Length: 285
Image (cartoon, rainbow, N blue to C red; front, side, top):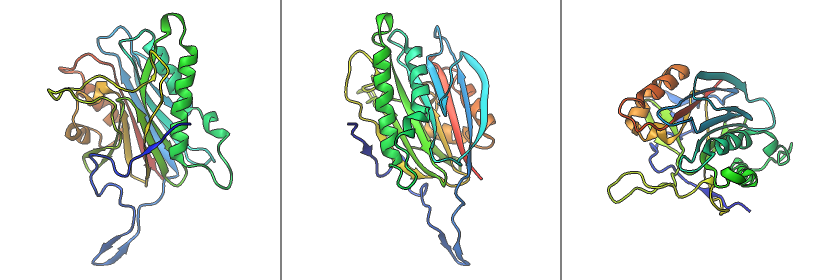
């Protein structure tokens, strides 16, 4: 059984980011933003100096994995009983077949069939539990396919699930990051399994899907409610190692496709050559 860590509040979150109650003003009560009926998803990825792009992204079971490609830009209605699933995955570069593990995880984490057996018409299970179980299932599938040269393949990942009405959950294993962007501020929703070194630099990843041996998956999961106008950003470490929260907040504004291109472009000058992938998810009417 997967153990879920529910996070009461993201560590670097602006306290005002998740206020969903109506605001009190001098003119009376202002209605809260409407619930979303659809999402717009934009995904961009770029291979840098490495032999291949070991990042991947998944949207509703579809996998984007390429050295370089124009941003994927799609609008998806939230009109069915199952949540929409979006993932960004980063293959472990120090192991063979990291790109294979990333592709498997991107598809399995976002495949609606994962949740189909659990979805009930009257009382569907919590999104937090479904997200955590999706990680566990993807981990088991990666280990099941890890044979021969790919025996130690693994990846880190972040996953978003959103239902009609805006109920959502985000989860991560490893160092793929999830941010909520509002008014030029990027608040981090994920908890990275990569403690800093004594010098303050990023350390080694301490949790992954797949990898050299079977281990307990302990995903970090955070539930939230999205309204029309909210934006989430999922990105690999090739992005967030180069952009701090201020830079991310400044770039991830305006049109989502333009913002995705700007984020990818900003990671290249002076970067370490890591692959860069970003998914921008906008809640829309």
